[in-house]
Length: 173
Ligand SMILES: CC(C)(COP(=O)(O)OP(=O)(O)OC[C@H]1O[C@@H](n2cnc3c(N)ncnc32)[C@H](O)[C@@H]1OP(=O)(O)O)[C@@H](O)C(=O)NCCC(=O)NCCS
Image (tube, rainbow, N blue to C red; front, side, top):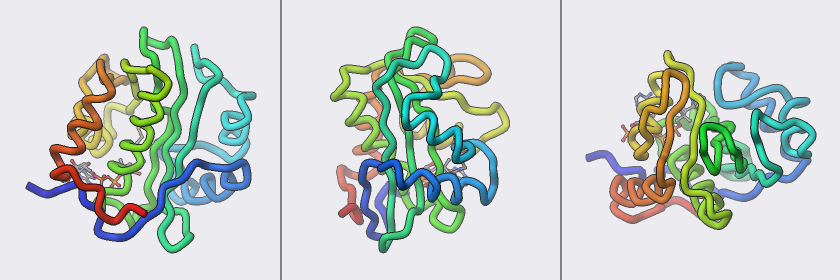
């Protein structure tokens, strides 16, 4: 079995306001799922933009390799679909995909949701985004409806990661 072990050393840290333009820039390579414009990201970060039924607590984590931004994940507390939390964006630069970056970002967000006592977590995924569907399924998410997946207990994503990786987060600094 392939493991969610990082093949490159990366650092994961919480985003600052000054990181937002860099996040938007890496997303703009494709402008697909997993992000949005700098204006909308800034408004989300500053709690001026609220996805449907979002509550105020929210967080963004970044993955960096040698000081360069290679991915990010964002999430907030919510009341949408009777969930406690929502994964808002997840994006990894094309050159760094399939090396475990997103798995490790997800693990960090899972820890934040647990700190917030959020256990049921949902994520919106386009039906044709088969890669994202596979990614989330690999981490224990189930289909809620055509556009949404759900973890009834987000701790399952952390446990699934440990199973996939043999309990390691190699490469993380
Ligand atoms: C989805 C995405 C975040 C995954 O990031 P990643 O860092 O490549 O993911 P990981 O390396 O941690 O992959 C873990 C698992 O996800 C699945 N996966 C990832 N990329 C895949 C691909 N190209 N084909 C099939 N499965 C894939 C696999 O199950 C993989 O495990 P494996 O390599 O052991 O088979 C990345 O492809 C991306 O940024 N896509 C564009 C933005 C997007 O769609 N975001 C999600 C919005 S909801």
